[in-house]
Length: 263
Image (cartoon, rainbow, N blue to C red; front, side, top):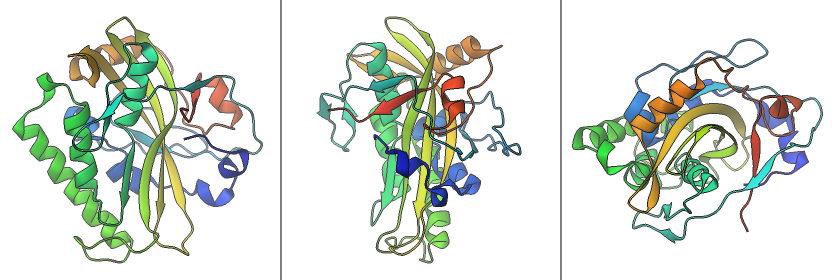
């Protein structure tokens, strides 16, 4: 997940994609606990605020690269579950953040749909107490609608594989812890969502910010509605961190920690 200076400063990657973020940056968890909220419209020249756990989107291209002051190589999960998600994260604050980052990382490409990805996240990262047949159905239906949007935007019929070289990817590039204890962590996640409609099409991208809470349950970290509500309470009265990329001076001012690829 590490990025080079050149990657972050390529002007072609800074195109705003608010509609794209609205349908894709919502993980199964965001859909479960707050997915009915409309995404915020970005303010001119800056980020818009939201108290919802659903992501809000904006973009702000940096003029010059500024090295992030804080870096972290988050740990990997110790194993992969039957749906392909990393699980078994260490019982540490960084382990909780690593799980939350994994739960906000998706790749829609080829025959892999957003339904596939969101159900993978739902069953891999949502705590058992927050799972239900109705919630899983809501996740599947919402992701299915986003798949239709993606297909049409890339010139294919819904249900068909995406064109060669086309993809939509979401990855976490920074985080900011708002509360932590031995068994609970609340954290802001800064994600980058990118779309490429084909081999020769320019990549477009945008950013989202999501507040989530993780609980230590059954020997692993899981996303939790109650922990997220407590994270929201802890964040009350604090300024929401600005949505800016690593390399922008505002990234440091907002208190983000950049993420290096784990070894």
